[in-house]
Structure formats: structure tokens, C-alpha cells
Length: 394
Image (cartoon, rainbow, N blue to C red; front, top):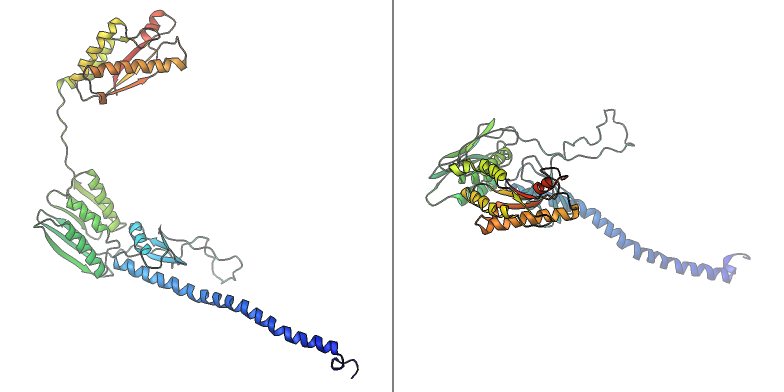
């Protein structure tokens, strides 16, 4: 039929060419898009289970170490470790970081907050939650108030541990730590039981308490009665006493602490008669034997040179006190010249005292320039009085 494509060779050729080209184009799209779609599908499938698997294995690792009350959230392979108050955040972070597949672990103490819902969210008919309100699901669980009483006690020949822990792994760890502290012949009285409901919130704090008790002299104990933790006995020093109190607070957060640990009182040596009167004698010598310098120099005048020996004898009579040697000038020079000159004068007296047998560690020299005059610089006598060195207890 005239005008039809069957009768038009050019049209037929064009149609044939189009039919040949289209399948090639479709195959090209398939080659490009199919791998992309498959990759997206695989990523979408793997992301959730990978995070869930890491979370489960991290929680299992924490449980195995006896670390309870900790939550772990993942973004990819990066972990956020939410640690309740009083727990050892550093230890929990190390445990999670060591889990196979975890890239980074960051400890976050305290409750986490969730973002507010978008403003376009449909109304549910209830009051809207304020922005930043802690989520009950994501926040750290409250510290249990049902923790069973515990007691750690030490005598010269035994260590007794009476406590409740969450699982066998926590007990094994605690037993190993006690055994590491035992001396030859020291008995370990194991009264550790397992009960998840009444277990201590942070049993790792017992380790610090055990170490504090290991320094005790004679009998010592740490006892929690359900209301407060009482520490009794004698320990080596004030630092150990403070460390034990902090560990007790971490073991049962919120409990009262009665720190009755005692530290040895170090008796001060009796003060000699010479030291009892040292400051008064030094003040008098400063009046009787002034150390005055020649104008513009760091040289003592003739009278003052012999006075330095009197200061040396006084300083050696009582070695308890340290002193400052202060150098001064009159106002004849400038600030640029008077300050270094005053330091030179102080250094000169210090060097002479050291030569006369005074311990260098007891002496400090300092120049003050013209900033501390004793007398007006308007007269010759006043300027002479200001060119001086003074020695005072520091």
C-alpha cells in the first residue's frame, strides 16, 4: 500500500536499525545498574546484623569480666560504651575495644540523650516529650538498691571476702585477685556467692578495696550493711585511706561512707633551743650587722664584709630554716641597670655564705632593684642604706 513502511525501503531500514540498537542499550544498562543494585542490597542486609552481632559479643565480653550495668551502641564498627556512674569506664572501654571486629570504642559516662522527633511528625494526642529528654531505652539503668551486704576483712594471717557477684566469671576474677595478694601462710576465706539480682553493681571496685587492705597493719575491714560502707583499721598513709574511700563509693554508688581508717602519726623531732630562737636572732642580726655595698658595685664595704661570717654562723646553728637573700639598690641608676645590679649583690652574698659552709639548698637569691627602699633616696645617708642585702626566712 502506498505510504506504508512496507513499501518504503528507507523506513524499513530505519525500523530495522532501531530494533537492532535497542537491545544493546538495554544490556548496557543492565551491566551498569545490576552490580550497583546488588551492592546496595548486600550493604542493606549486612549493616543491621553486623551491629547486632558486635553488640551481643561486646555485652558477652563485659559479662565475662563481671562488668555490669553497661550498654553498648554501635554505628558501623564504632562502639559507644554507656557506663553508669561509679563504674570503671576505662576498663569497660578496653573490654569492648578488644572484641573482634570492633574498630573503635568510646566510653560515655552517664545517661545518653535522644534527639527530639521531627516537628512534622503526626500528633498522637499526648503531650510532646521535651527535646533532649533521656530515653528510658537508651539511658543507663539505675543503680540497684537491692545489692546484698558485703564484707572484706584482713588479719595478720587471713583475708576473708563475703560478697555476692553476678556470675561465675566475676567470682573467678575476684578469687584470682585475692590469691595474688596472699602472702606465704595467709589463708583465703572464700564466702563469695552468685546471685544476679543482689549482686554488687560494680564488683571491680572490690579490687581497689582489697589492695587498700593489703597495706593495712593488723586487722582492717570494709563492711557494707545495706545502708553505708564502713572502713576500719590502720593503713599505711593518707593517700591509701582516700583511695579506699573512693573505691567504697564506686562499689555501691549512693551508699554512705564512714571512713574510720587510721593512718600513723609521724612524730616531729624536738626543736632545738637554737632553732626556737632562730628567727628572732636573725631579725636582730639584720639590725646589728647591715650588709651595705659600694655605690654602683656588687662589693660590700669593709664593715659589712666581716658581718657575712656572723650570718653564716647563725645559719649553721639551725639547719631547719631556708632563707631568701634579697638584693637592693638606691635610685641612682635606671630600672634597666638597678635590677641586675641588685641580683649581683644577692648572688655575691650567697656565694660567700656557701664558701663559709652554709648548704646551698637552703639559700635563694633574688634582686629587687630600687623597688623596696628603706630610706628616702634624696640624701646621701638614705642612698647608702638602700644599697643593701637582707636575709630573711622564707
